[in-house]
Amino acid sequence: MTMHDVEIAIVGAGFSGLGAAIKLAQRGIDDYVILDRGGDFGGTWRDNTYPGAACDVASNLYSYSFAPNPEWSRSYSHQPEIHRYINAVADEHGVRAKARFGTEVTQARWDEDTAHWIVSTVTDGAENTYRARHLIGALGPLCEPNLPDIEGIDSFGGTIMHSARWDDSVDFGGKRVAVIGTGASAIQIVPELAKVAGHLDVYQRTAPWIVPRTERPYTPVEHWAFTHLPAVQTASRAGIYTFNEFIAFGMTYSPAALKPVEMLARGNIFRGIRDRQLRKAVTPDFQIGCKRILRSNTWYPALDRANVDLVTDPITRVTETGIVTADGTTHDIDILVVATGFHVTDSPVFSHIVGVGGRSLANVWDEIGMQGYKGSFVHGFPNMMLMIGPSTGLGHTSMVYMIESQLNYLVDYIATTRARGATRVEVTEAAQRRYNARIAHKLRNSVWVNGGCASWYKDVHGNITTLWPGFTFDFRRETRKFDVAAYDISHAASRVT
Ligand code: N01
Image (tube, rainbow, N blue to C red; front, top):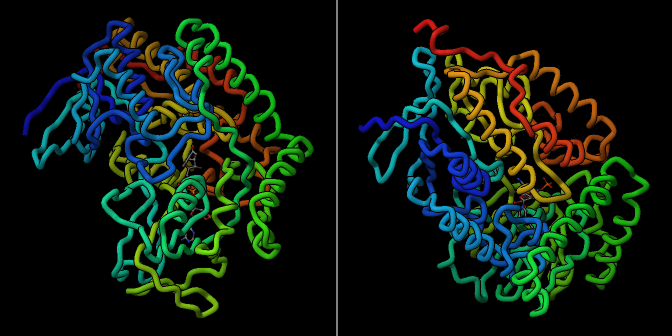
């Protein structure tokens, strides 16, 4: 086992891990390493390769502000293009050499005696350790697949795969296929599989609200303008941002304002499905906006196909050859796709991050809920900054904007601790408590709390701790400067070692 000393260990090479690396390097801070279990940059956009995978935030906004891409082919990008973009940005900024791919972080443990994080890794079976002053957890909230806990699922004899672990070698042609789930992933997968499967059963537990997707290819004139008149792309980005902030977000707090969106979604059902019974079955029974509003023009027509059945009877068990539903029917299948989402608030990774007193993030968050400070720091975990941590998720606009806001905070945090010669920086319990009380107060009138749905936005205590309940420019303002007053800061001279 080899011990490597670094100032900063960044875990994760998605949008936030890469952004952190670039911003640190631009500030002249280059003693860092990026650790990622995958084979290249991209995070969720590397791992989700299912057919039809695409983003539902417009391309010009779903990119770094410091790396506009005049070559986006479409107004909403598909996974391969976003994956290529992220890797191209990494190369342009020369940070690839800092990445250790194929490296699984098995544990990160705070060592109080030395005020360092001890990060244990495995690469090709070889164990290594990184001793880092600062740990940046750029893990991505949607990285740990949630495999449904359904009786008998392990006994299924056919092919089974999660949407985020797609096996490209599987041939769906003419096969009997089942997809469990009707979330953002499933609504992209099903229309693609419906084209090739012999028969497709779609298992719906909760019908989602889905509005039309306004995706189109960019025209040659737009490409010319994006390339030669960068202000045009900047203006497009600003326009989309402003629309999302003031229209889309403002609806979150106003049921009346959501009515037109609901009409749009109902029209989508009406246009896409001819059968009245099926229309009824896909009409949601909770307030629009309570769960993420999805976008598709192809989901309803796919459900209306002769080779597709929507199954709304609850699943009771899986057998070696198929799925048994509550009405007693056995649905025989060859391939089972589970598009059942991710462990967001109960990620197994949380038990691998061990802070003060040997308490893991899982221990702490099981007790108090998934709370943090400015989405970035957690009391009990000194010198550790999380990217898109608690209360930073969005239902209406680009996460890249939130990530870039945190990058300001990150760089200022490192620069401030360096300037002060600080060795240990921990957000105070009081600052964290006040912050979360403020978040909870803002959330109390939101559709996420009052919309009558269950969603992955809620933590194990049933509280919304994944979402940012304000305009995103408010979050940018909050994270503009590292606010030392909220932290206990120790210096080498004042430490007892
Ligand atoms: O996961 P989900 P996802 N038995 O958790 C069902 C982002 N994303 O991968 O609603 C039966 O949303 C579950 O049912 P219910 C985006 O942020 C973005 O689709 O809980 N069903 C639900 O229907 C998104 O929100 C994009 O009743 C079970 C589905 O599985 C997030 O990723 C594309 C079940 C899970 O839906 C997650 O989306 C893809 C069970 N035991 C993803 N367990 C775009 O940008 C779960 N379900 C377009």
